[in-house]
Length: 293
Length: 287
Image (cartoon, rainbow over the protein chains, first blue to last red):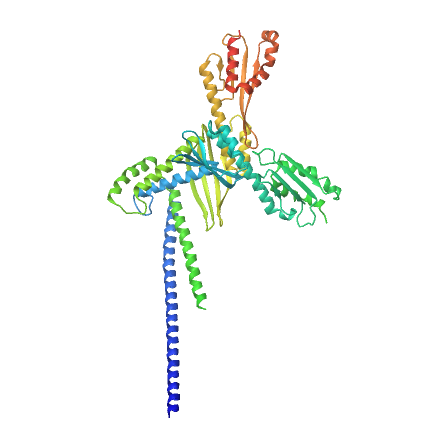
């Protein structure tokens, strides 16, 4: 009897345990489903909210555009629907307007702002419409003009230029520095463009120094070839220019005469045109005839 | 399974948020670009803004901050205009296209660099990539009086073709400085030696004539051109022309023939002002 009772008690107990476990699992699942539903509801609500906001904004913008198209000249009311713009709106407009004009100064090459100890100038560089890096010069103006901090690279002759012009004519100093920086940025841009757009015509990578005034590379004039018969060494003697003063082009000894004849022409092109444009001109029909397989 | 359900909503939420951001920016930009307040209106607002501060103390940006910010910006702008000599008289900006990463704005600018006026318009394309913003100028159009020298108009066309706005301003700045320097020098000598110095083309012309008041027929013409090369480099080019009457020519051949060379040496040794002054003295002595 003991055994029987023990057995049936264990059976009942384990059955109970099993039921308890099942109930627990069910509860968990229910909770999970509830949470999922809640999350879904929240997401749905958020979507509705945003859709409404978006639609209101769209209507506001459409109305604004219609008003602007309808009126000749400018609108002097700063706030849609208000008869008179608030003083805050007027001042905020003016702040943005002055900020925009300061941004235009950035485009002119020399901009900056006053600091408590002097001025912080910003020299911007560009190559033919594409703006490149800009460099900062933090100047102290009293008791004498000094460079407090700057971001000019070490291979630009900043010290020399400062010695020559900084005390007597800051504008001339900045102008000379800008010439150097713009020429450097232009040379680097051309080398980067060549590497990026014509890598299939270059053997390996272009070799250059940090000032980018000496470039060495082996190349061919039509891409996807195995050989690179031409070898060029470009020297930029004038640091304020972005075209080379010397272009030494040679051909590998075993190359056909038709190629060897072109080295003088290539040298001329490198001295006249920007590097990437020179390579663009190389893909003209006359050039590719020489490279017939 | 559920994840993909969430994903659909989450994607829509993200795209809606982006759209809302762009629409809000478009609204702000259009408001800014189509509005104009005159300086008087601005001043009036600044004055009454002070009063408003007493009445309301809320707002994300306190009134004095806004006023301080405006003053600081205007001081910077006025310093830059004075330092560079470039003054913008009008500037208008219109956002032509704006997506998540690309913005195209059309700018119209007019102003002067020292005394030389210019007008230009261009499109500025800005692309945001991961680390930085790149800016490219297209459709550059420049209106500028080229004056007497075709080098200027050639240079302007070349910068327009390549969108080289920065080079245009750098060269314009240099050219305008020389132009101003020349005008001041001519003015100085005209005032100091009114009988000898003549300006047939006025202060803005590119030459002066030195003539002794006692009619001897002896005349020196100093031509001062401001040369612009294709790279935009500015160099002053000065030369001396002599007009000598027959009798003097017979007597003092050597001096008059050497005059231009002498002048060039003087320019190199003493600079422009001293060289011109020396010539004026020489002409003043001749009888």
